[in-house]
Length: 127
Image 1: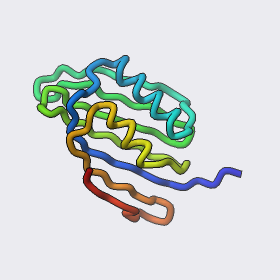
Image 2: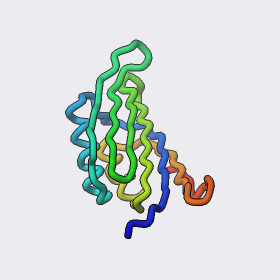
Image 3: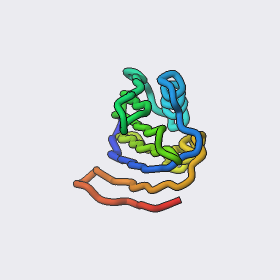
Image 4: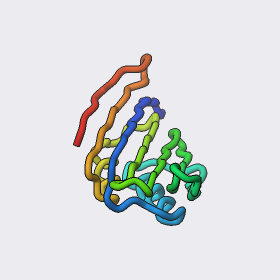
């Protein structure tokens, strides 16, 4: 029987090579789900936002165990990426960091939250 383990990883990164198209971001989200051993139930869905000051691609993917979302501001230099994944299935934050590095991380801040019995910070850091 499946026993949920509620974990939430939130990241903020500056990157040298951000995704700039819906297709590129959808491929990245699909690869991520495979890497962390989860199952897609809907999506991925990505759109490019061209509103001045908010330019960039944004995407979500719905998982059998919850969701992941990402927002990219590609007109900033280096580009800003904000990403989170929430799951009731255990996953490796290091695997997520490695996958984010496809965008060539300049700096990364993260917080890993355990939401099993309330909300508790499991770990946080900078890379």
